[in-house]
Amino acid sequence: MSETLRARLYHVTLWLVSLLFFSPVAWIILSSFKTREDILATPPKLFFSPTLANYADLFATNTSFLLQLGNSVLLSAAAVVIAVFVSFLAAFCFSRFKPKGTDFLMFLLLSIRMLPGPAVILPVYLMYVAFGWKDNHLAMILFYAMFSIPFSVWILKGFLDGVSTRFDETGRVNGGSWPHIIFRVVLPQVKPGLIAAFIFNMIFVWNEFLFNFIIGGVSTQNIPYALAVGAYSDGGLNWTFISALTSIYILPPVLFIYFFQKYLLVGMTFGTVRGEV
Image 1 (cartoon, helix red, strand yellow):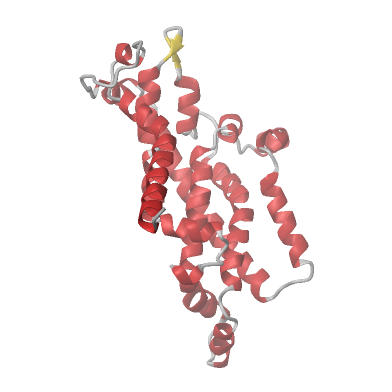
Image 2: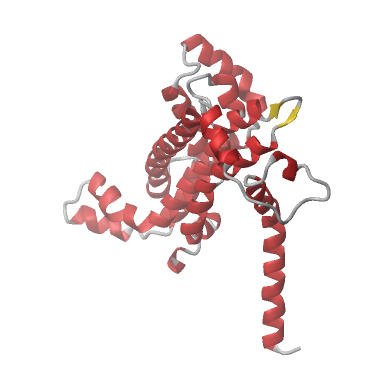
């Protein structure tokens, strides 16, 4: 088999696998332009008259939709910005100053992120109720930031380890302060890691449902909350609502991943291929 034929077969296989994995997403997007009868038709309809009625109903009848969309954007953006900022400083400390027990501390940080949500929801709920933090935007933002910090520290430490300490030493010799070295010298060199950490954690917060449902409330409910409580209507699944809301819901993560996909690749390798970006 020639190299050209092998390469073409390889690319065809990649396309088939990609289309296979994308087919559920494509189907839900197509369903958002169908009527309820077309969605439930047997056999499934591939050719139909598209309609925007599902989106119109979503904005007209669901008065909480804009609030839920705004909450998703606010909670995701604010929590991840705080988490990435704190994680960068913590990762810089671990990478440059190497305090005693750094490896063990890094393990403890990551082990916090490994905990399943249902295992910690009860004590978190009791704490939030005791302090009066339930259904509070700031409290939800700080909670999501806390959950996002461990993984961000791991990603950013890998990038910072790849930045030579000579930059720090040169800055100190020339009279630069630590804030100047951290934010003006080192930070620009780990931009891919910052973007990767931002996207990974944004996807986590954007998709989070359990804690928003339990320790959140009416004023902090997000889109996963809306999907959970609005999925059933008239004695069955409201597929028009689900398809329209899901199509809008997946758009921001898809755009982020599309425009910053090369940084995600670097982030998944924890900075080991920094030079390729």
